[in-house]
Length: 327
Image 1 (cartoon, one colour):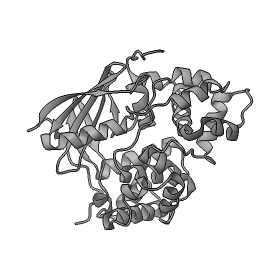
Image 2: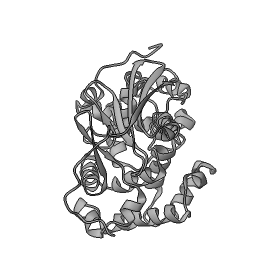
Image 3: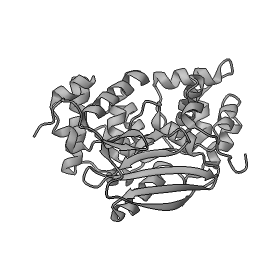
């Protein structure tokens, strides 16, 4: 039955019938949970990925039939504490998702060394030392975010995403907050077109979302297909879907598959953030990307954090600072 654009259902109590389990997740130092989650969230209005006032990261993972509540905190630069609530059979998968979403195993020595040698980038890289490359938990979520954020401002896209989640996502009550579980492609495919239109999506973006959902549902596209290809070939595969161009494919690879060898050029927001960070210093973007090499994608996250910092929202979003080993 098609999903209507009626008032969203009241939030469910996520604690009901769930058994908590604690895990220590080793992290390759330097690692800062607060900065990594801020890069994942983009803006503090994100209703899926939430930072609590005490600096913990909370979210609902899994599908609608088997939700898992995740709480991640950091008191040690080399270890994250993960609390999972839900069916214990779902815990291994959820823990694996947390590990890859927060990039705790990624060694960024190459980027840090190159950034230190770049005059305009070095101060920013020093301030953001410890940020890891975040990833969305699924290819679908990465595609939806990339498509919604096409050719509109960050704030406009975030407002559209918020309205879409209110219409389609399942809400849960936890720690005095309402969390929204990201809707699967099945939910979007069965939704009435009016729902997406009311959220602010254009007809073209709605059509692209449906094409991606149908490709995933049919098996014509899946994450394994992309993982098996280098970034150039993976981007070409994504671009076979009408509505996914070079920028969108790059963002999907970066934020969805953790491909750090790509960087979204021809991006107005990136251009503004580059100007913000470099100020009056000489700036040769091509030379910088070449120097950063296979980890050039980390520049995207640093620029995103620089913009948050300039708006005064980074400290508020991050909560208490965490000491970084070797800083």
